[in-house]
Image (cartoon, rainbow, N blue to C red):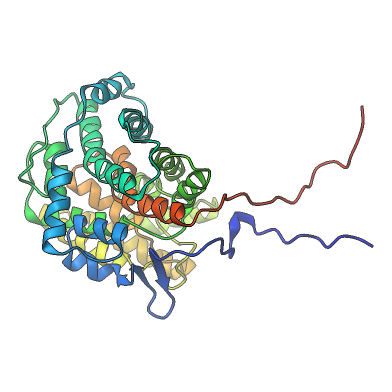
Length: 371
């Protein structure tokens, strides 16, 4: 009698490993829901701070709760001298994701409550990350350009301050709003690779900072967070809308992956794209970059005709961040600044009903043998 061959789900495709109350994609509407709210509605009406509160607490904040969160976040925006010194010692040729990963490790080492597993301590650490990760990203981009640090301002909201620290001024409202929209849209997406990594680490009873460091490592990969950088690499290769047909013919012949297209979860198009595309359109008009908008549309249309594949969120966010003025290598750290709200929400959810995540493997090596 032979043993039944195990069914192996490569990439855990179709495997449900746990329950979550944080987000889901509604098959009927094809909408991503944060705690039940369609993300496009949140992006239209809510600040990023409100969305962070929603993910952490399960409901939108009252005016008093929002004011308290804003005051707490704004009070923690200044990086310690120790943390800035560590960033300064990182080589400028290191990828910004490596710098950010190291910076979060330092934040954890600096936190005397790092071993406190309580929800209260986790919320405190989450707000600290919300406040300081933008400062690291902004400072790192400026030092690479040879520019001096721009201190945070406590009279600005999250998005305004992030852009102020990066560029030395608060840009026009259309830019600030497009940035806010991107932060809301990237904040959470159920058990994606980086979130699952954070939950696996948390399941071992490790600390929140370690979970976020691991998630950053997962997000660094081009099949997850790095795609928004690669979209602009691809646009540079193509050059203009007129060149799309020839470029795509060659790329498909070479079996290249067309970055920014397709999604493991969405089968009828990424529900976040229309909202981010509208934000991109506003930037294209603001900066008079109709050429970029034409290239975007030409490739999107060609992929729909040739492959029947639609864009994911990385496709409009890459050119949007480019128009805002961010360096290409900074795009994925921006993803981190947003998604850490979802990661930390999942860390707290995992801790609340924890079980060590330890899957099995089907052995396919040599049979027993002896020396």
